[in-house]
Amino acid sequence: MSCGLDRRQVLAFGGGALAVAAFGFSVGPANAANDAAELIAKFTGGKQATTGKVKLDLPEIAENGNTVPMTFSVESPMTESSYVSEVLVVADENPRGGIAHFHFSPASGVAEANTRIRLAKTQNIIAVAKMNDGSFFTATKQVKVTIGGCGG
Amino acid sequence: MAVKPRIKLDKKEAKKGDLVEVKALVAHIMESGQRRDGKGEVIPRKILNKFEATVNGKPVFSAEFEPAIAANPYIQFKFKATESGPVVLTWTDDDGTKIVGEEKITVN
Image: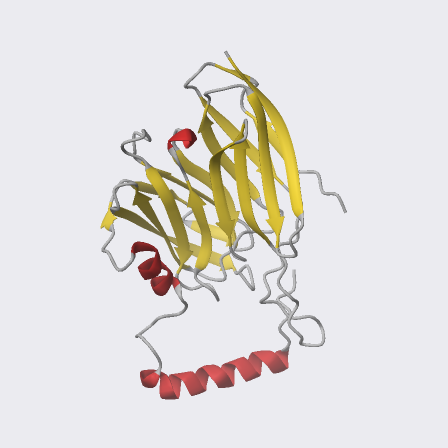
C-alpha cells in the first residue's frame, strides 16, 4: 500500500521538520508528538493514573503497522459495586493520539477487548482504565514498527 | 451497499452467569483522512466511528473508534449471559449510515 507521499512532499515535509527543529523551543510542551497526553488528561480530569491492574498485550515487534493486534484486560470483579466503566487507548507517535475509547458495565462481565490498530512508527501504546469509583489505572507497552501504517 | 458483518459467538447456549465471547469483523476501508491521492489532495476521512453491542436490548459493550483502527475493523469482547435474546451489533459510519448484525444467545 502506497503512503501517498511523493518525493516533492517528502522534501517539503523535511523542510517543515527543519523549520520546527529551528523554532522547536517555542512550540508547546516538550517532545509532544501528538495530542495523546491531552487526551489522557481530559479523560482523567487531570487525576494521576496508577500503574497496574491493566494488562496490555501487543506484539514486541510489528512488521506491518497497518494492522497490529491489540488486547487489553483490566482486573475487576465487574459487579454493581466495583467495575471498570471506561478504557481509553492512545498512541504517542501517531499523527493523532486517539485509538479507541471503550465502555463497559457490570453486564460486560469482564473488562477486556481485542481489536487491530494502525501504528505509523515505533511508539508507546497507553491504556487508561476508569473505575466506577473514579480511580484510574494505566499500562504502557512499546511496539517496534518495521513498516509504518501510514496515515494511522 | 449493504455490508454484512461476520459475527461469531463462542457458544450458542450459555448458563446464567457464563461469559460469552463475541468476535466480529466488518468490511470497511477505514480511510484515515491522513492519506493523500495522486494529486496530493487529502483523501477525506471515512471510518466507522462507533460500535455498540446490546443483548436483548440492553447495552453490554460499546466503543468509539479513531482513524487508528485498522481497515476491516475486528472487535472481540465478552458479555455476561443473563437472559436469552438477540445479540445486536451496530457500527456507525462517519456519514451516519449504520451497519447492523445479529446473532442469538440462549440462556438456560
